[in-house]
Image (tube, rainbow, N blue to C red; front, side, top):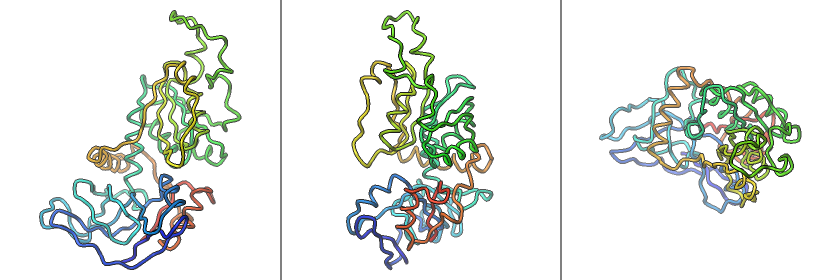
Length: 329
């Protein structure tokens, strides 16, 4: 079978390797699509020879271990499985879920959807109709916007430096869109916008509580986006950090965050069993139309294994309206 390995920074190679064997408690899955993820761009750009990437996959069951129940050869499945840029992968049944008949293969890569659902559930509205801001409108930010709309948020304010990203944000439910340099001052609670804040606890200083948002979700994955998201949180508000900040350390104005008494929530998830359950929930939400987050990867951004390096370059550059990329095997 074909398998992709990295041969150095920004370089990959497709090699032939044996189809992996499975135990009686595993599944062998013929991969249909593997998703490209921004979290793996930096590992690709700094790779050492022999590194393997890929954690977003869907495919068809090719072999079932004799102890495995509930799966059959030919079932369409998705879930959690590493090293997905190859023709066959071994999956654990407890990390594998069925794909509903009415969900297309291209929409059924469940791992990033589960990450989105987990993140959004950590930042629910206090009351139906509450406003929220989303900073960063790539694939994950757009997914968050569409989920927040489904969860009952009212005004959804989206921020991104790219005009095409803001167009996409409106398509998925944003009610207001801005580039960072066009944000109204009443959406920013910073040292510059505060008017000599009253540090007493009598609640008379309206600026601290009525400027900015009680809920802000950051999905930019950049230092500037993270700092801007923090600036948009009002006093005693909550900042959800969903962007993946793995390329370098971040510098933030924690003095400001401290003064505003904001709560920060790391929206990432490391509980595998919990995330596997969310994969199944995501398939249900897509199937029933509750979460209409489909059609993100078009043919321009579906690649072969041999085009993996090009795919990463186009992901970083957002070439030709890029939102989500897939590798077809």
